Length: 253
Image (cartoon, rainbow, N blue to C red; front, side):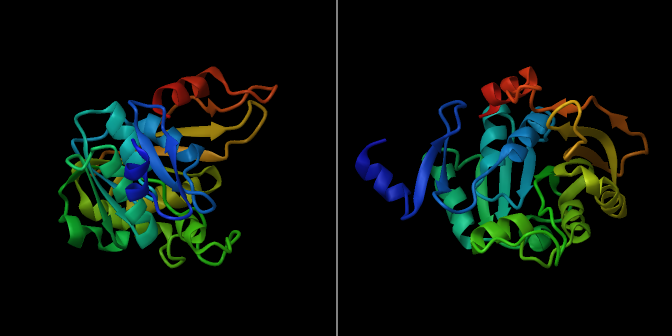
């Protein structure tokens, strides 16, 4: 891409990062919110299991639809983001990669997703929800980062999952990543939304460490029955990436 083309894509304080997958790139803020390992792990976890019509709730800069679309040519995404700045960034990344026919970004509150997309129309939902309930956790002085980490600071996980359920078809799948310490809370929220947890995988740094994250796949209207997969360890004792992490990064980022 030439200098003039870059100038039309980037705004002040932004940069383009290489996703190292199918030539895809993403626009991100130099000092603001940028996607992390959790998004990469979730993309690997669900890429081959998402349905044709999917939605990313709280897309941020659009990394999940980009990574998943690169690995699964069958899927098309609606991507919803509350922050106008990040929604604009995500939409420009989609255009830059020529994926407008497969990924459509909308700015809005996930709680209104059903009104935006239609009730019970989606085959699957992927989401990296806000981790901290209102009034807890550290608050970033950067408004963009704070919004990405905590949503609008008024949408608890129960409301977030309920919004996911409203757009899912019966039999549709929800994929999410969340702090392992809040597994019970998010599982209860899923069941309240008629989404039965069916498959979980914990993520830990090293073999001697307790899990920090958990990835969950649930089915709307599914029968009880939970598969617990082996723990995903991200680092070896010497601090380097495990073989599985090298595979994940080699194939998805």
